[in-house]
Image (cartoon, rainbow, N blue to C red):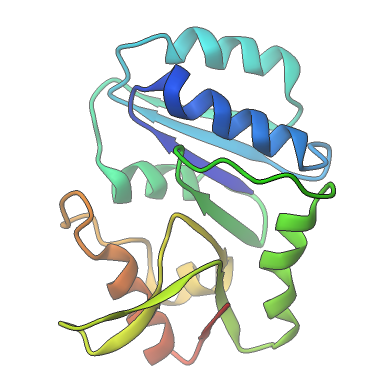
Length: 177
């Protein structure tokens, strides 16, 4: 499952993101979930169009802005796959072979202890730990089942990814690039 949370900016961010996912993914093999929250632009019309063009599309619509964590959490609850990708709507995939980005995220799961794979890890000085930056990560469902969903108490850029990775590691899962 690929989850893309969106808050307005349909033309600037969401369309280019979804276009790149469609271009570089076999859409018959993935479930695409758009979590639109508080959108007042043309997002609804775009999602209505996507429903006619994209197989396995789910839309989670909320009239009010939920914030990053909650927008992802409501979509995670709708996901049916064992591996769930959290992809920011301002991410555009670079030119590549079909499914290459999915294979890159999936490869670390050859290690049975992998719970989260990512494109980029960085170090948090306050936490004293490294963590995956959640603009593009794959999380195995067993991590959510073990530690729960993302903490919804953080503000914009508040550190929910840092906390989630630390909790996952403390529960015995690896966070791998």
